[in-house]
Length: 410
Image (cartoon, rainbow, N blue to C red; front, side, top):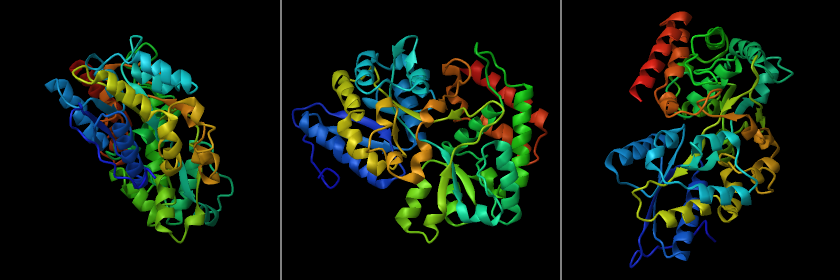
């Protein structure tokens, strides 16, 4: 009923809520969420003016609101942005505690990005799990009988696949989603870190050097040449046009393949992110909901973000979201509505939130680190070496300088 509704929200006599939320790759999710939001607005006599925006647009929305002292009542953000703008955001500890208690609690990596000096300045919303999506037939043709479990295994398999004309494809380009998720997960797997546990810059290390050296070898021996310029949609396109055999991605490639009824649909599957010497810490992009202090509808905004994390929304939304949107509340993992509990090709995504980390890992969350994903310091550190524009040592030195300047500017 809701997915097809175009419920009108009447503004007469009622103060409206303006919400800037993240747009999602899967169109049916966007349509259903719009209907659910309108349903809530009608029920509570509170018109909701909903904008579903890209990461870049949401970042600009947060920055603009902080500068102007005005803007939407609810802003969704990611990559520690709510932490960086904590002074602008309302204390919502009460509703975060209520929602968390009712739904099994929040995952740690999400909580860390929302709690500033003991105060909840944002509410976790969802994350997009990541895994390796691959072509089973290409792996078989290359003689790969056992799926890679480590990054060294990935290099071995990718070398065979590239020699066959079907390389892997991971982005060293300025892709705001896939780029940081791949680069940080690889970097951390080799023990690298931007800061140590006390927040001191720790980038110039033997672990960083080993990670960059491996990235260079992986690019030259196993990856598509175009990996250096991939934007977020590009690896999806490369995979679905059969140019690459494997990439790191959420569930959108499989969803698109099903939607387009591609001839090789049955050959698409997933396997877990590989481990490095330091394990499998993953940069999972947690989206969080903040309410600026200038809002004239703070209590209604609290009710609205609680609704977005309620079973009234997630129960109908989860099946159509295809595990691209996964709640950051623990109780949903085993719910029958979660696609990874019914679709064997999505099982690999279950439990990833336990491996999730934020940009500050392994140190402490800091507003100073919030630009790390959007300024592509880490991505460029790898890309300069892969492209031959800098040596490993020179590129690390340049990255260290960029992080120091970022600290000084914040």
